[in-house]
Structure formats: C-alpha cells, structure tokens
Image (cartoon, rainbow, N blue to C red):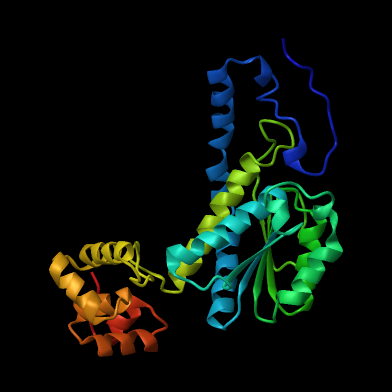
Length: 308
C-alpha cells in the first residue's frame, strides 16, 4: 500500500516528505537499510557542489589563525554535537591547542548528551556566547540544518558586530544569506529518509563539511607533510613509535636512523624530518621551521632542498 502524499509547505527541504521513502515502514530490514543508504549516497555530490564556498571559509579560518585569532563553531542539536566532536579531535590529530577551535553548543555541555528545552531558539544566548568569547579577527562558523536556528543566527550576528568573519553551513539551499554572514555554504541534501530527521543526510553532510574544513585548514597551516601527520611530539612510548614510523614513511630511512634523529630533535617530529631530509643539524632545522611558520616544505625550500 502506498501512503498518500500530503503537500506541506515548509521552509526547509529537510522537513519535507521524501517521495522515495513513503513505503519505508512496509519494507524488509534489508529494504529499509537499502533505502537509507540510497539517500546517503546523494550526500557527497551535494557537498561537492559547495566546495567553492567551503574554500572561502577555509581561507577565512587560515587568515584568522595566522593572525593569532581563533575559529569558533556554533550549533544546536546534531549540528552542535558534530561541531564539538570535530573541534575535540583536532587536538590529538594535529597537536593544536584546545582553544584554537572552540565549539559553542546551544544549551551547553548538558545538551551534548540530551536535549535542552528551547535552547536552540535562544538567539540572545547565542549572541551572549559570542560577546564573551569572540575577538576581532576570529572566524565563526555556524552550523544548522534548517539555516534559521535562532541560537546560531544570533551568534553570527553578534560575532560580525565584534569584527569577526562569519560563515554559515546550512541544509536549506533555498534560503538566503542572513545578515552578518560573510559566506553561506548551503548544501542541498533534500528531504530526509524520515521527514525532519536531520541527524541523517543533513548531519552526514555537516560531518563531511566540518572534517574537510578543519583538515584543509590544518594542511594550509603546515600541520602535515604530504599526507602524513607530522605536527605531533613524542611524549610517550606509543607516540614515539608512531613518529618513528612517520619519519620512515617520509624519508625512506631505517628505523634506527629515524629513532636517533627523533632523540636528537628532543622528540620534535618536524625538526627531525627537516634534519633528515636536508642534512642540516637539528638546530638549523628548527630555525628553518621557525622562519617558515612550521611548514616543512617551505623550510626545506629555504634550505634549497626540494622535497619529494
């Protein structure tokens, strides 16, 4: 039996009913999973369509961080939880300070585990959060499936007044750019498999966008060499083993040589890497990195060494 479709006029596409899944409750288990997966496979193409706008956001973030500022994420519900996760994972992945990327979640820490009544509707709370923590030159990225969450829009407007650049990741491709937003990243994931359940495609798109945004920012800041994580310091046996393996991958040298270089560099992987690739001593390698904002390739170029 086919469920009759009702025309519901809603602003956000994620709230509309999906004509491809109206019979999902009549399907077998594998049929349900197949229908959900078919919707999920639409997400990467939707994200691909907004890479130009995402690149602008990345460049704003890089400019902010190079200038001594910070990146702020602002979200509610699924959006805020995904933003909090992304900010937390950057610390161990790229050895950055935990206050470099700051997540602001409507309702605070309690709302990460369970919903807080009306928190996402509080534009004043969002604005107050920015007034207390955002400085001129920071970059603030709001994340919302509907594109109109008051907490997020209130925060972005306040951040703009503070002199920060702002961006908005929205699941509403039909929405207009709100006042105070410098770059709108409106990804069209369409109606969810279950109407209004934005933890599904909209959330998947947000995860892809946030991961790409923060990773690209770290790459632009020189936190990688090639596709290797080199911005870590060997502070224990586990990390020392990992850094030695990274040095081996990057240089093609033996474990013994890489281990000795890491010891000589006092556990600083980048210093050991530039030392091994350039042949200069660790003091010269450290100086070259310092003069080039920690970029391994730029440091090597300054030493007239072409990295492979």
